[in-house]
Length: 261
Ligand code: DAK
Image (cartoon, rainbow, N blue to C red; front, side):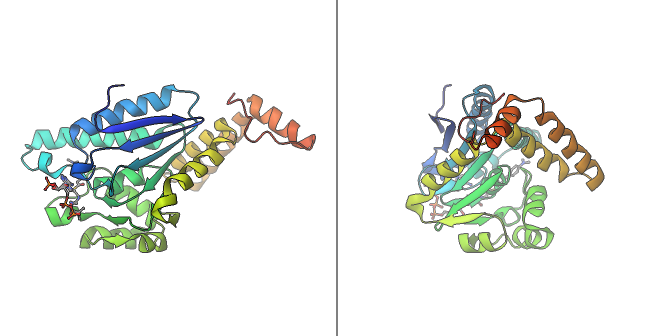
């Protein structure tokens, strides 16, 4: 992979993806989104990677879509930019592996939307959050009006989006935008520890849970629980279910040693 604006590292069962354009506070331009698309393809392909951590280099996670690139876009260019961003974010949301956003700093606009497309968000005490788009004359364009409301509820989402205000990590924690808050120097280690804890459980079961939660939240409860029954049944076709239960009955545990089969 030829990457300029993103760093990609593998550490055992996990991958660390760092948006690395600190001069522009890691703002997402077309080039970075295209690289991100390639990174997702790599994450999909590599069966050794069982969980992913995404963070930002420097004092920002992602300070939004790139305003200098967007400023003079035509209607067609704006639409193409939106289509690319939405495609990348949907691919990330649907990736068959859990993704943890380690929010180290500014998490604004498209950056907040990127975090919302991840499965779990944890933050540094220095992180700042918001959807400043209405202050720029636009609406959130990478799913913010949809995923933010699903995550923090309609009232809190409308307040954040209509006011364009910036909130700190404690407030983000209070409204449920992030799961936990850590001192900056331990954030990445905490994210990796969380990723490794998940990676040590049965990967196929974790993937099924992700799909069931993501699909179920979009549909009525009868359809959702029917889908849950389907994935539950599918677990019984895996070696990991047989061996995991066998280990339990023999007073052992397979955690950390599942085969991903
Ligand atoms: N885009 C481009 N450059 C940015 C940027 C951004 N979003 N954010 C910061 N930068 C650049 C600054 O211009 C500055 O560049 P130089 O002047 O050094 O060349 C450099 O990063 C450092 O920023 P500051 O000097 O401003 O740093 P401060 O610490 O003073 O302030 C800040 C940090 C995060 C409070 C401030 O930079 C700021 O307010 N940034 C903009 C945040 C923002 O409004 N983000 C939302 C962007 S709108 C769509 C799809 C998606 C979207 C829209 C449409 N379609 C469907 C088409 C999404 C839109 C957005 O995300």
